[in-house]
Length: 273
Image (cartoon, rainbow, N blue to C red; front, side):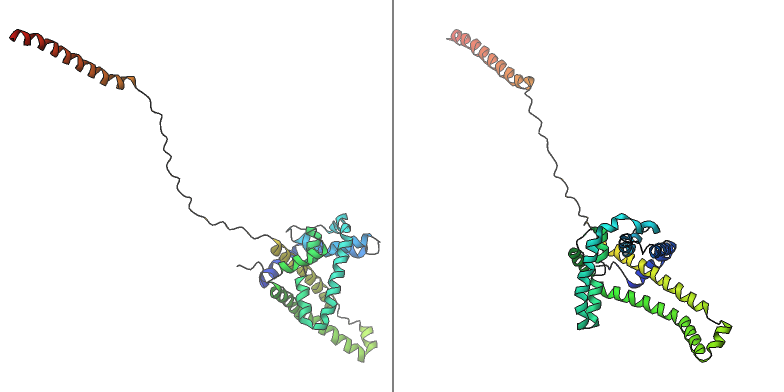
């Protein structure tokens, strides 16, 4: 059976999808931050931010205004009930170690998307997510691992620059303030890398959700159709009067000729006597 997702295939496709929608995602984040203080509306926008991979999975450039769609507020009860189920189940798993916690987290990683996109109940969303991710948990784990390692390696350089600046200021605080030698480029680079990581991560989960929820194509085996048996159409028998009349006429003429011969033979026989 061919796998639906691979590590580098999902990362490459998610990278392009996240960059294509980077401006829209940035606009959605800005609008979310500006409206987070509005009661009741902030609940819908919070649910909408969780549904970003669903919108990205459609393959189109999304609009940042989608977070204000009223349909997300309809799932308020189911959304928080699902989060409650997950938190209640995952917290005790921490006592059994890191590995069961990771497995269950990956198994239920699509539950929120299924609830908001397919309209499933919280319990059905958890069960269906576990079925869809069956056989792909290692793939999902390595996708997250690769993304985390790449981001960590990129962030090492600006982080070391900030650490060096902090160490220098600890020895000469007045000199640092006077020279204002704050490495602004390091802060700017960290912000950009973190944003790109979030965009790519959303694109990756959009690809995973689309590929794991799409139905498998039905393969129809081509079999040679049996050759139909030839149909023999029997024509109704037509009685021909000419065919039946000829033999009868022949027999009657033969009878008449025989009668004439017998009638002519009798007088000759008397004369001879």
